[in-house]
Image 1: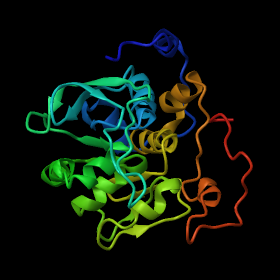
Image 2: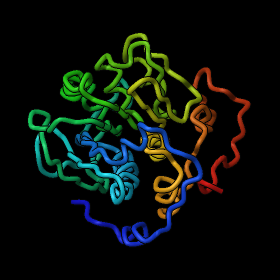
Image 3: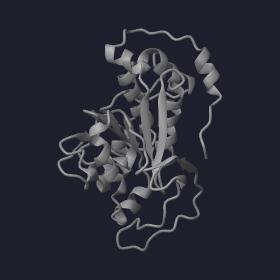
Image 4: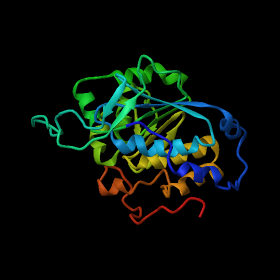
Length: 275
């Protein structure tokens, strides 16, 4: 599957944009800077971890210049179906060939990826396979690029790769709440935040599970470009109402995450942006 222009693009290009607040100097500068974005793929990636943020990023690129590279161990199609792996300790590997899947096209390998400003690491069941096989290819790539990156983002269990690479030491981070206990065993000195929908610490952004990647992407782009105008219009054009409170993830209660704030409301905490 290759991404192509979406039907929303003409709508976005003809939308009248208004700005309620004055953007900062850095946000104004970022609007004309062409950021190089890389998204890592591996067999068993979680589709929405990639496609959700990409939907927002593609629409924003109608206004602000971006380039994108999909990066994997090899170029070509990378399936979202996870290879067989142990899902329950002590039990045999589970074969997931019966699952439907989507394949995304990797444009670069870890060796041929261009210079990057932004790197996004998704999660997925394939993370377990990589850990099971002691495959540290993604971690090595993160380590090699970390200093030159402006921003490093993870979605869902993609935070495992950040933790294993060592870049989360003394950093705040979060992850998929249903896999919390598995994820937090990785990394040294990570300040795991049990109730966070997403975290931002220095150049690192981490989100909770799957759909939370879209919430983080909205917050991230609002920080980079300013939210009023283009970013808000994009969210309303795709009809997505993001969570806007980084400190509260109701799924931390649903999944009984140790240390989570159990007093928070489980009622809907979202609405269209700007309203």
